[in-house]
Length: 282
Image 1 (cartoon, rainbow, N blue to C red):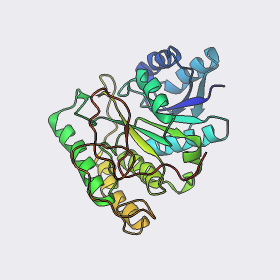
Image 2 (cartoon, one colour):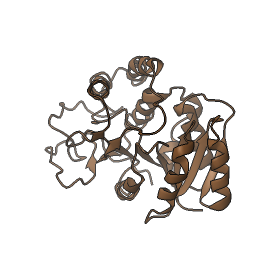
Image 3 (spheres, rainbow, N blue to C red):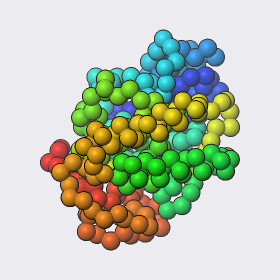
Image 4 (tube, rainbow, N blue to C red):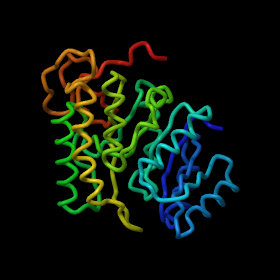
């Protein structure tokens, strides 16, 4: 068993699963893969079993029904925590996320509890999206920042790497959101505890095969979720116990609140402005 687990939720991803598994197997760093399949009618679950039988680092977890991205990830996180994995990834099953970025995430995770892949850090990196979808995503990011105070450029993104100790602080049974709101909720739960969160730049390529899982319900859920998180945080727009900081403008900065924002032209990991290191966690 490797130290790192990549959780890949699937529903009707038969065309993508085998090529994605091969990309993960070919990485220069060793990772295990967990396919969490929601009883796909196209045979994705069967393909996952065949890959698991052939490759010891590939595993399959079967769920009886399609109940959303968030529920699939929760099942995958629980599976990981029952074993000895120290780093756990979220990765889309449709190649929207480039598996080749995983070594960059792992490097950033040496100094972080959560690494966020950002489509908007130091520019926009999105392929194959219509302008309307881009504006929806950018507007959602602004909405989340204004309501919750989280200073991240891409709070709805789904390419993430969690340290085990971060996941262990979350009561996974109390997380009921899906889609965009699931991504926002988990990040907010860690941010408001003062955990160390950094962003790294990624290129997001929308699926060329299959169909998007986006829906009006996912959007509405996210609109209301951010207010719920604000109330859970005592109507604060900062981590609990931290003094109010003036808003940062112009992009991410170093982790120290008093430091000035710095550009990041070489694509190195960018720290969460205003978020202190985890308090004595090891």
